[in-house]
Length: 139
Image 1 (tube, rainbow, N blue to C red):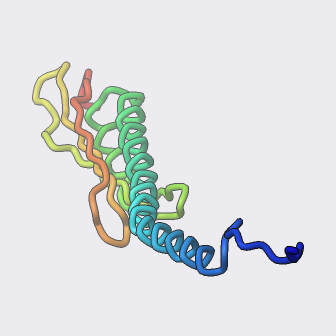
Image 2: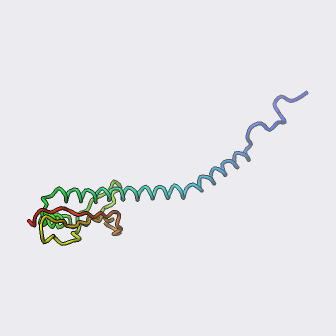
């Protein structure tokens, strides 16, 4: 007669199998950690680059919206010296606008405006845009 409380088959998982499965899971999870860290860093950088690109584009839009005179362009560049904006993560971005060509000698003409956006702490350039701005007169 057989004892009904004891079976000879190996149904289910034993403690050794569970421990091996957990060890494999930990190894796989740890191998994915560098990929996740790299993705987080890339995402963080992309936020700053996107914000910088938008700021550079905005600078060009604002310059084009001004009175189309050389005096207005020079005033715009002077008014943006030392201006900082923050991206959504709180990184401070420096706006650097420069006229890369002299005002024209005859009008109508154009002047070249360059807008560079840098990280305030490191000076790393995140975005640069350059455009010709139409000018109808000197002042």
